[in-house]
Image 1 (cartoon, rainbow, N blue to C red):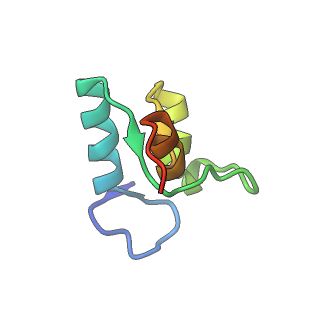
Image 2: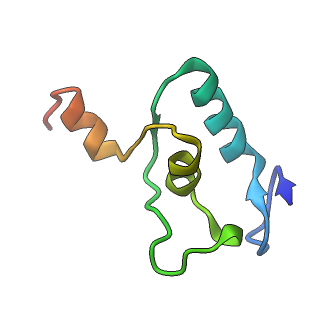
Image 3: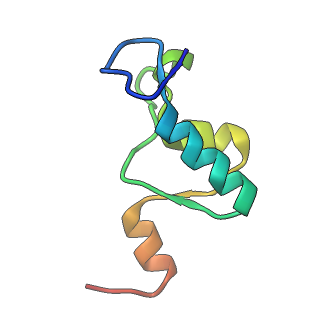
Length: 74
């Protein structure tokens, strides 16, 4: 089930996340987010942005990885 606001209901994927991933695929750009893959309990119902990016072949970077890739130091 895809929902614009999932209210933390199980079995839903936020429409905003899917839209962002689709836009990144279309524009061939990476996605930068603070989400980490769901490695503890891999589940189709609890997929996070990095999980979907991996399946769809979209490059995903954490914010720190993005800063390093761009040569930015704080």
